[in-house]
Image 1 (cartoon, each protein chain N blue to C red):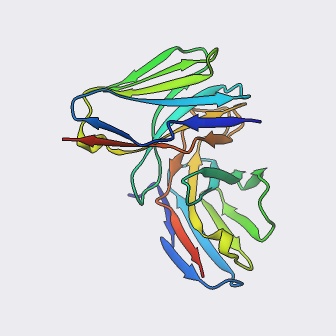
Image 2: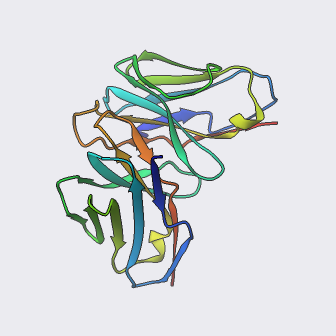
Length: 112
Length: 115
């Protein structure tokens, strides 16, 4: 069956450290993968997109990698801050058909 | 200037009632969506419309009926509400599939509680 799995446990890290979140998928061949941030009581907000032919994408303190052989994406936040605390969702678009499949999210908590 | 706005933000109602959630976007996008986020935080697509035409209809009970009067609006009507319909419903918009980045712009969500 097709699955998308993110770190099931909440991730707690110290301010200034690098947070690394994992998104694994099975039985999909995504054209691209997206990462979103969701704060409590708010809608998800788009962060980054990486295409199947890209290995790495960066935006300010954020970095995403995409390994289509391992069927895995890693999402890194460097020099993390308490304001980075949120739930992070990965999403796959399988055939550029406008249908994004979301993982269940990983809750990140950055302690001062 | 809210890009994707939904109303109401909260909705509490009894089983068996009918309710509607409205969504409007001012981004000029052609494509709009309804997603459901359950208590375990899974976001699942329900419907997608492109320029008022239904293009994605997941296995959603036919008690749920989306309506798109124009490409800036996508409303969701739910008949005969059941306890299991309790969730947060998100409206979203994007450029059409295959165009742009596929990035979704979400509304703030409408929390529906069925008693």
